[in-house]
Each structure stands twice: as structure tokens, then as C-alpha cells.
Length: 310
Ligand code: FE
Ligand code: FE
Image (cartoon, rainbow, N blue to C red; front, top):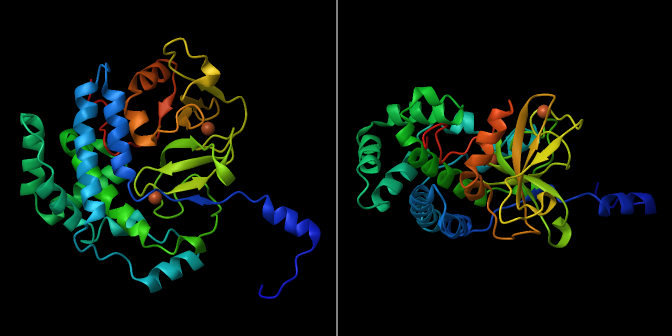
């Protein structure tokens, strides 16, 4: 309210409100590529992580010099924000032609050498028409992995991420407010890939959920399941590496007995280079362990089709 004078209690309350959003840096895909390369050393899936690093380099090229990507206009974004709807709702945007130039641009600049199965997947995507590409993308973003060839997933996912991160950069995000449901991205409506517990400045100690699609991060209180919102009896599981104590692990899965789901969390105080997508891909052994204990993975990672690295 313009001109409203805050009482002392209100001032303190306002000062304690955590920042709702943490927006990705403009070089987010370069950062991810560097992280993947450092995680690839002596890793059983090293070749796959290096391949994904090259793909992230291509995503950064797209973000730095995007093709024309006609996203939603300012008026419809403002209307969505006013009605507490995601202004870049993926459900409608993926059905439009708006993101298709990102896939063409990715196919033009991503040239990994010497991997026949990757080349076959890229050729398959290149030959598909717009309708087929959209059908695959709709299946991917809705988690219906049986409706598209697994080999296409990382490349289709990478193009979609680049398009949505491009639109996110242009969004008047300061006008976004928390929705009733905090388990989906307030910008595009996608589920999180992982959480980040930040360690610097006004974000220190706060947990943010990282969107699997547009890379926006939104505040979500700690010790609360990101799927069913229960706070009861959550446990934290990590892979023991190099004798690191479990409470000092960079990556831990927050597992919920109420819904049998889990979400991985990166603790930046223990490694500030951690990246939600890269560290998730490098810790698939933790998913296997959680699966054996009866937990279900619900977080999508658009650079990975479930079971494709078996
Ligand atoms: Fe998003
Ligand atoms: Fe839960």
C-alpha cells in the first residue's frame, strides 16, 4: 500500500521474510559443464558425465546467443502473475511452436565426435517434424518416459531447458509471489530436480528448490518433504565418500516415510561449486540405494531417461 507506515513489529517481520526467489546466473550452463567435468574424474559414469558437459556447453551458447524464441507476451505474463499462475506455464508453452527454434539451434551447434548412438539420436531428432518433436517434449515434461525414445531425452531436455531459461531471464520476476502449492516451480510449473541449501549473504542457511526445467530456485523451508509437504520422520541419506562424515556430505537425499519419496539436496557450505543437475547425475548410486530401501524417485532430471545408464 503506497505511503503505508509500518509499525515496529511489522518492520521486523518484513526483515525476516526470506527472499522468495534465487535466480540462476547468466552462465549457469557453463558452470554446470565445469562441475560435470570435475565430477567425471575417476567416476564410473565419467564418459556420460563428459558427454553431458559438452551438451551444457551447447546450452550456454544458446543462452548467450539465442535464436528468435517468441515467448508469452508481457500482457499474458502479467495476467498469469496476477492470478498466481506460473507465467511461463510449461504445459501450454511446450504445445506451442515457441521453443522449437531452440532445438534447431542446439542441433546446429552440438557436434559431439565419435559416438554413434548419440549421432543416431541427434539424427532422429533432426529428421522429426514439429508435431513429433512436440509430442516427445510433452511426454518428457509430463514424466511419461515410455512415450519417447530414451536416447533422445538429454538433447530434447537440453533444448527445452535453454528455451525456458532464456524466457526466465526476461521475466519481471520481482512481481512473483508465493503460490498456495510450493512444491512446483512458480515460474513454469515444473517439479524440482533437487534442493540447494545456500550459504552466503541473505540466502545463508535457506533451502531453495531448483526447477528441473527453467532453473529458477524458490524458497522452501527445510525439513519438509518437497512432494507431500510432511515434516514427520524425514531422514537424510548420503553416499559415504573419502571418510566424509554424513553430516558434512555435499549431497544428501531428504527421504520421506509418509510418501516414500525423496529429493536430493546440495549443501553449498561444503562445496560451493555443487550444481543440482550435475551433482544429481553424478550420484545415481544413491538413487539405487534409495530404490533398494523402497523409496521412489519423483524428481525429473531432463538430461537423463530413467534406467538409460544401466
Ligand atoms: Fe521452472
Ligand atoms: Fe513426502
